Image: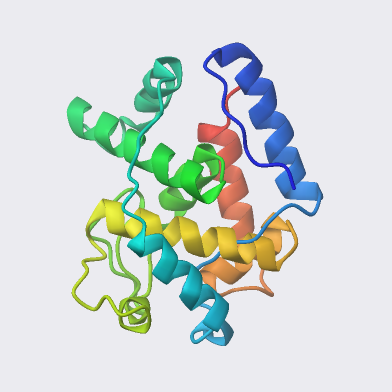
Length: 204
């Protein structure tokens, strides 16, 4: 299975992003996760992945593509006004997406749809934070004291979950997004993510 690869040169990287997203949309690739799907509430494999993710202290940020940061910062400005906070968030989002083997642009699209980049967001069913992670997972993985409104914690769990569902669905991104949102049989949520991805985050 090919992993998402990075390039320091922004021009070939655009083609890699386009190719990678096409693979995610149309071909079997990998596996990921959301929290709202009731059938996965006690999924032992997902629980193990989350435990491993949260025990990994290797927060090594190797991202040096300043062109990407500048581009995405301009696109994100409507949601996060402060320049410093916006860049810090983008570095974190890119690091966690890369760790999980996901395109950072896809993660940004999911966050836009899930919380509109509001770290304090809480859904009507209790999902919390940027990627709307259900709080029961903290208890399931033995970390009840962690805070889902902390962006680092939320992104680490959210990206791990999305990756798990993508693997489970053998690279079918539409079904993986449906599982992430807990709406597997409805096309509404995946279409929202695809629209956000195409309109705002995909690099042309």
